[in-house]
Length: 146
Image 1: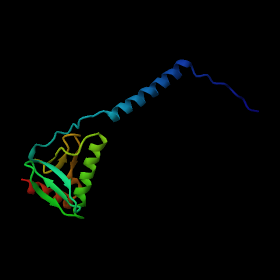
Image 2 (image 1 turned 135 degrees about the horizontal axis):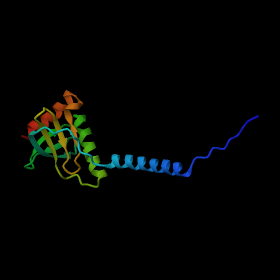
Image 3 (image 1 turned 45 degrees about the horizontal axis):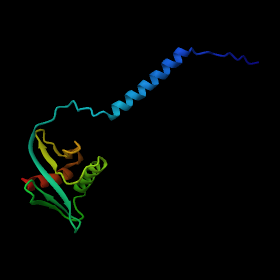
Image 4 (image 1 turned 60 degrees about the vertical axis):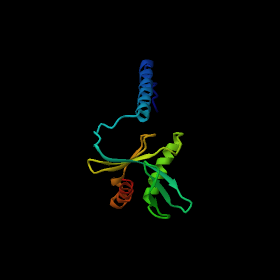
């Protein structure tokens, strides 16, 4: 003996629930795609250099300073961190349909951070957060480019 009772949900309640779901999904999609600014104030830049990076035939990387002269050379099969950071930066440019020729900016900030920034994409990598050895790899590039 089972009793089956049909329950009826009023149509306005169903419409309201559907609209609420559409609104929530739309809000989430908008928030994800919006370029929201970081509310944290940015530390002042103490030192900044524009650098171009070029792969060498021997597997190394040549680093060119603002005057166009080679200021640093990453030896073949060394500095995997520098290679990885650059690969990520160039990948972002490629995804956004940008060319590889414009310089990146390596900056030392007043709060002690060192970052590499791509003015074309706005992408920044804070280098100190990857450990002392990786940080020092980019410090060597910065010091050579002075």
